Image 1 (cartoon, each protein chain N blue to C red):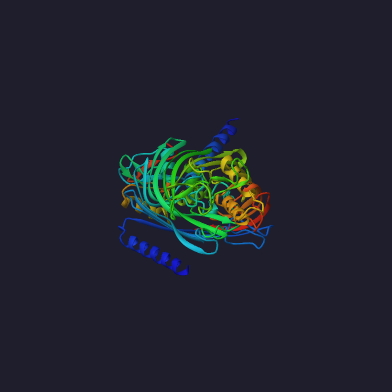
Image 2 (cartoon, rainbow over the protein chains, first blue to last red):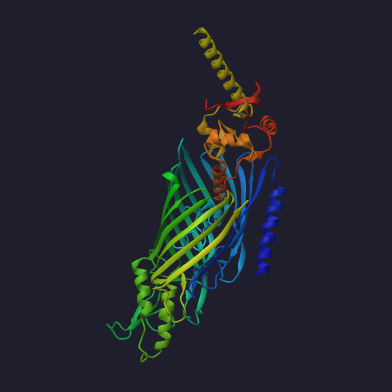
Length: 433
Length: 144
């Protein structure tokens, strides 16, 4: 891992050096950086949101990054941003990654073209989600800000702006692709396919989408429609698991999760089609109050999976001098079909008298976990204290209740992720320069 | 009676004189630009200093600011941008970290700013109105 980080850092340094050396004298170079040192601890002995348990962790929220902006008077620019944070490929390492490395061109006031590695503005704070001083929350609500495993793509983005005296409309279109891991947690292994524990399945994502924004002094509105294909590295993806009755017409049976089990074949597709619909608003109210509402729909039209979700949050904050206290409610729920399948599969246990019952029962629970179901709500109360315009302390109490099942929880062996209550206490220091 | 009228008149003249003396002492930013740039309205100026307008009549504009803490910068932000330093900085921190550019370059003094504007095509900045001279291209003054 260290070698990988060194390789990434060396590559970035070389790239930056080459670019800086080839810059015309008139180009303006600006280096900036950001970082968050965050700690979180819960009142539960199982892991929540990848890292948080009653032993505490600094992995969940800590991040450090740097950015180089190069602009030329002719309208050309180059932006490079790199960060080091918890790995998105496993739950144990840190890694350095390149968020942005794009060329930009403003041929006129109303056009912006960008090509290279870009961060998609899926939600209101997706593009700046690593820079803690740009929003009051300790962390952006996980329920919504986990729509995709990565919002960094290699591609092209075109933005057209209509600028009025007090209102700005922006229409952005993009196309790109990326490679990212989708995280699963299996209480029981599905040998020989998967072992129990954390599982990262690698996918190639191809994305196209458009976002319309309206920004004025009093409020911001954003709506986006996105289409993604996710192709699993290992081959076709299962989209339907057939139910195999032990006797014709009987409800006693099992869902065929493993191709080795008897029964009709599992239905596969070459890739997942994923549609995303996003809607968000920030409304600045009198007396320095602010209302933020965001909603995201992740839809898999072909597959019955728990990742087919509705998610959103509603936040209210108020600036009082250097303080910005806030509270928010956030929720996520899988679409009925996927959630019901996961619930049914999770509780489907054959009696011991059935041959291979133990093996089949384990496969049902592993199948429920692989479907990736979500049903949970969170309530957070916190505050940011702004030490200066570039640094802040934040404090938060988050209370989460899971419904039937929630893939944000690593359920202990033999138990469920559903029906849990988790309190998380977080503290962070955020800085930018 | 005439004595009191004369006293009133003197007092009035004194107040008017004091008013003009005070005006000449208070730093008022005067928006200036490189030769050839057109005059501006306040809305256009705000869009330039927030990175939303990058060209005017086919000329690429390069806005520059005085360094953070300079009294004339504070007055410029207050008068023309209708923001304080924190709001302006917060705007640019956000804009930079969504990949939409970086804030205008900071210069240390009005003399440096005047030199930069004279030498750089498309440059826009501000100086103290007391430093105005006929050869400067004045783009906006008191929201004309």
